Length: 280
Ligand code: C2E
Ligand code: CA
Ligand code: CA
Ligand code: CA
Image 1 (cartoon, helix red, strand yellow):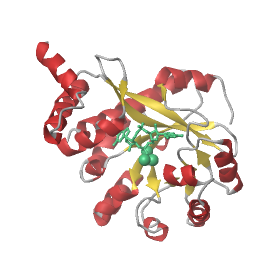
Image 2 (image 1 turned 180 degrees about the vertical axis):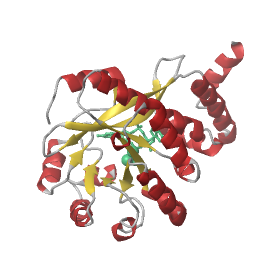
Image 3 (image 1 turned 45 degrees about the vertical axis):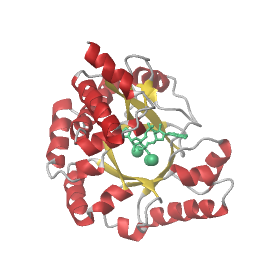
Image 4 (image 1 turned 30 degrees about the horizontal axis):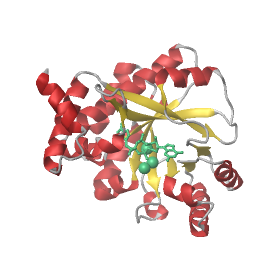
């Protein structure tokens, strides 16, 4: 309709000065996109350094602009979804779709993969989150140990006591929990280790700075060592170069994720990559 075209054009009109107005346009367009099933998940491989093999993927939401055919990056719509509450619908959709896709790959005979889904701080404030997750696991027939939930340090620290209870409930379902973007907040690893998490993801900003900034390298090294002492696995995100990889291998990092190995891929492309058994 003309009205809808109007919305889609306005969505990309950089001259639109009013933040609130722009947010409302994105919100309405996003609501329609969710209703019409126009979002997709792309999947970025996580590679285990010991074997060089893909052992999991991170599911990342993608929204295709119907007028230009371009993908709209989540940075442009996740915040709007969080402010409007749409993130609850989007988040449940992402969980269900990631589990469904994981089962589809398994049905195709591909090697088992852990699929990680990002959770927003807003979802962590919903006391029914564990029952939402339990229902989705049951509906999709997904074994809980193949689902990983990524939570940022700042989401956990917003209401730490409440988060701790919720994480314990989630953990009791059998899913894996990881702390995303670690190192960007101010919480200590000792404090975070009281939460029932399995994995720590070192933020891309440290990985990015490894070669130029000796303090970033020192921080990354000590995060790896301390996490291991606390019984946590460590993954580095945003690995783009051979030298970053070599550094992480040398310091005993467990897994890597980043453009060096692969960008996030559409489900079919990831499935194809798995059949190739490509090693790092
Ligand atoms: P994130 O969870 O930290 O995800 C990693 C981001 O880094 C992704 O951006 C990924 O495409 C990008 N990336 C991966 N490897 C590299 C690399 O080597 N170099 C560089 N420069 N970037 C790399 P993306 O897909 O644009 O997502 C941005 C953020 O949006 C995510 O950050 C996450 O916070 C959020 N997000 C995406 N999908 C979802 C979702 O389904 N739910 C929620 N709550 N948040 C989501
Ligand atoms: Ca993440
Ligand atoms: Ca991250
Ligand atoms: Ca990030």
